[in-house]
Image (tube, rainbow, N blue to C red; front, side):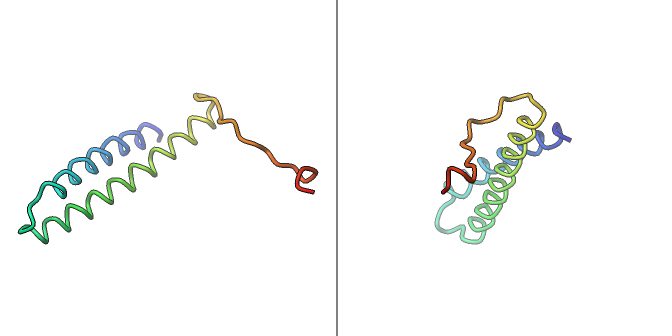
Length: 79
């Protein structure tokens, strides 16, 4: 499953950059094409972020990457 999510991550970021470039480089006369390129770039960016964060959590849970340093607040410290 992790390899499938990693493949989705690569494809999503590729779509983000490709359609983002198309949206930025299209002229003002290509109105509807620019909107479609912006929407596809946004979808690619959202899927890319989701897949990236999923892979981070998976790698920390399986021990492949060490967990981040997080502050754990106990009840005694909040009083």
